Length: 433
Image (cartoon, rainbow, N blue to C red; front, side, top):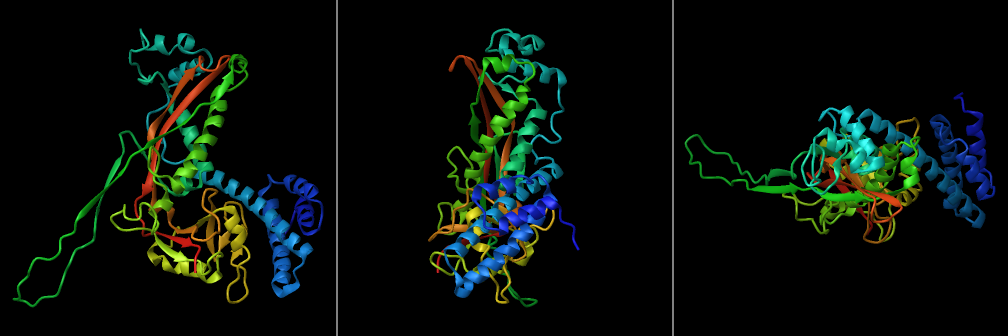
């Protein structure tokens, strides 16, 4: 028999037994750092969910049963989110946080030390000027931006990029390309090559010639502007670089998450949903739009549409394909069954492994639309082959002690772009009959 920790059993009992929500949530939080315990709990909870939902499907539903189904469903969602967070950290560690900064300029301890002094004291005492023999502020030096900011050391740049990969599900699964120029230009042909069979001596008339299309991937600018008190800056025990990284990466990830899904391309990335059939950029790519499969109901997702979505994707793109949906959509598909009365959704069974839908991995994307008429409630496909994230190397920090005295602002900006490089490895599930 598989060993289950006593704490895991206690949490499983809390989930399956009607108890006040405050007590339930307290019990669940008590052991949410142990992956094995969480996996054991979510498996036990899912068994309870299936039993309760089966009773509901048999027409035995009442207020108590409905509340139980929703309570267990919410608990499963909480634990699966915690497991997904652990999986994201594993992925970020395994891949080094993406391409941002990896293998580029080596770290410079002297500059890093001067940059840290710049955090606390500003230009006059930072040592950056004296290091480079800089006179007036307008003079250009190594690491100094023309707007008055300073280029973050490469190791700090890597820290931010790694954290973004851990938080942002699209960045984590897409292809990330670091650039040092203004953008990337990709050339596509329209595949309009024409051929034919001829006899040995027959004429060979000219055939169709493919036309070329060009897509530019140009980074927009994302920024954060956290403020620190003067006392915090003067406290030598506080790691200001770590503090600023924590303030910045959450805001950057939040903005990126929105833009990678639905961005309009104006000073930001083009979101993947804008390339779906009928959307704003459906005609943007030379190879067409991301194809749509309907859910089978004007307001719901039906089991058959999940299977249709999977098999509509060409077999050559199935390797690495995943579902992308928000948490509420996961709650909806958790109730679906196949023709043999088996539930299509299954929880994680090991650390590093995601929940699955019809055997395919699920990635939670908070910024995806929910289940409602005409919404794109889910994507399915290979995100790495479909979507490109462009990182302009270098994070610029401008120290501002004047705007909001006695606080010091750290205006931090980064250039990020994105768009679909190939629509064919992705399918979209649209709510509709």
